[in-house]
Image 1: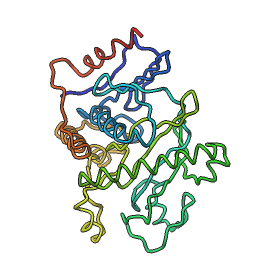
Image 2: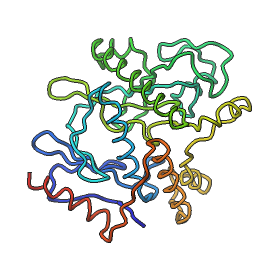
Image 3: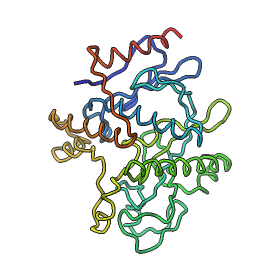
Image 4: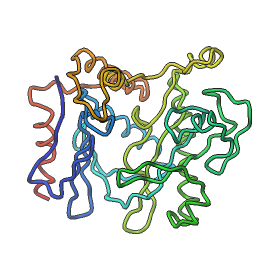
Length: 315
């Protein structure tokens, strides 16, 4: 099992452990972001999925490279398959989700709100008579407040964002222009791979000059909803969800067996973990068109990452 569960190296400065990423802030304004293989759900870590961190880092790398002409991003270097060195940014307090279809399951998704009878949401009016997973007349931005303190995200309109001082009008104009252009590029390249990019999440921040940069990840299996294009017409007509990279085996297995917010998590079967790993790998290959190259060397992923970050400890 090739698993990177932790990446805590004491000689690196300003360590911060996120749910799935381990981070270090260097004195010169760079940030080391290490994607581990931890799987987070129900506000806790459930298990680790082999190669998950590498898949997410390398999928984001593909898209950061493919969209660099649209929007500047935080990437400076990739010293390891699980690691990105980025500019340290002040993350903007608005999370951006761009949606091309009437889909979703969360409380802030447009399908959930639509089924509850709402037609005006996020400052946008949707027509009556739409069906689950129907394509929207045009892609829309559905911004929410970014809950840094563990609270719940709340839907916002562009007017609320500016009036409440979350962003200036100029920042909102730039951010929304970037988001729609990134989504259009994502849908275009996904279509070439036989996929539909139905919706996705973006995170932006500002650098020391106030310039807006794309941060975090872009168009990965964890931040985006992909459907298999050839499955869409028949699925839509039948009222079913189109085929997708269904990587939620572990979450579903746990939820069926306990209250995952309160109970002790039962031991998760190894075959379930391995199946989820294979889904991530297949998703990477389908999305990017590249073959996944696994690290099967004798040293552990943790030792490999540590070795590849040695130069930053001395910086």
